[in-house]
Length: 168
Image (cartoon, rainbow, N blue to C red; front, side, top):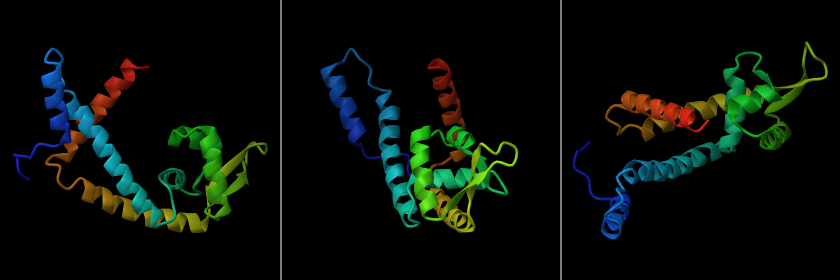
């Protein structure tokens, strides 16, 4: 990977702001603007990859959250909402679609029979494992040009924590 790069659209935007508003430093756009653009590119790549499995990112998130729970691959709807950061309304729609496709099942909670749990079906387990393998291969491909991915991950973790603390 070369240290010399061609100017991009963010550079052009920053140059225009420097020209038009020399009193305001647009330097943060070099990070925030690029992260915003990269996020869009990442979303498009993830959408395309999940579509190969007939899934949206949100549907994969639900299946993956159940898979990460370990056998019997089951969580309450409340746990799912918390673990996926999906609103309960959005989660309910995803659960309905996944259940219709036979990828999850609603079960009665063993302790509180008034509660329903969401569990991966055998077909859901097979699909999420296949999709996860492809997902990890894609993510490795997407980060292959980052010189020090662990340092970048640590910097982003710290920045995210600071932003969360400042805005909560």
